[in-house]
Length: 341
Image: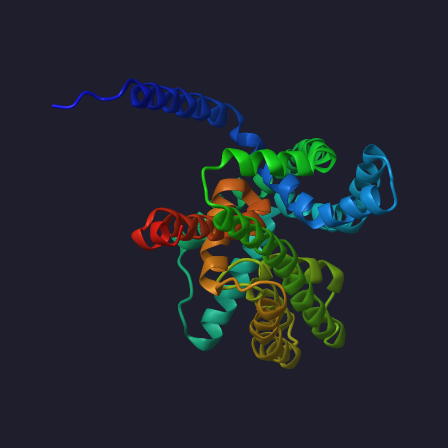
């Protein structure tokens, strides 16, 4: 039997130490993973402008990074903060009056069942819904404070990415044991994935929300801006999407006795608002990046479970990156890939 070379033993031991330390570090720092992903996403979106300011206009790196971070806060995070502030009062009211809200919903369902002789729910279902609402709504409010911490850490990481971005990318290329063509593919595809998800998903949500807002205003829905925000958020949730917003609006209109407006709202939602997703998603795939709808759907589910609300964007990126690494592995180590090397 041939003895294992000492060099191979040393290599295996070193890899085991690296993997062990990596597991320990990840387990202790995993709460900062959303901040790291957010920082890298903003870095991909801003690095072009960072290079322009520092290379073409000779700005100091610190000044350029500070300006871009401030600009990203105004353009991206400030509107989100305003939307959260708009929702906060409504959610706080729902938390404090969750029993009354669910009782009102139950009364409407009973009237609907009595009128049309249908059974839509049971006492057990409403009890479970009440319990779920009492547990979930406070968690939504608590998530706001976690988001503040995540944003602070994200900008801390982003600053160093902008300052030392080129150096970090060069070091990463030297460390990764991949062929140059696969390194280039990894870089290009990763940038494309970030653009497609970080820009495409929120843009589609805003478009659906804007079109739904037109319907809310035309039909005289009370507090249309609130329902606009709800529609934007709901549209990023797979399968049901914006229906989580316009269906309750239609039901509320019918419950108030506005049957015609309620039916028009439902028809407008299913016929117009939902169609926007398919049309604009196809257009964005052609302009920004080709991400399959299944990746987006399962990515959102994965991201919500891992990171909460912010996972709506990062989940699809992780699945796409996983598939990309499989492609690179096949190209790097398959017989065909070795022969082309």
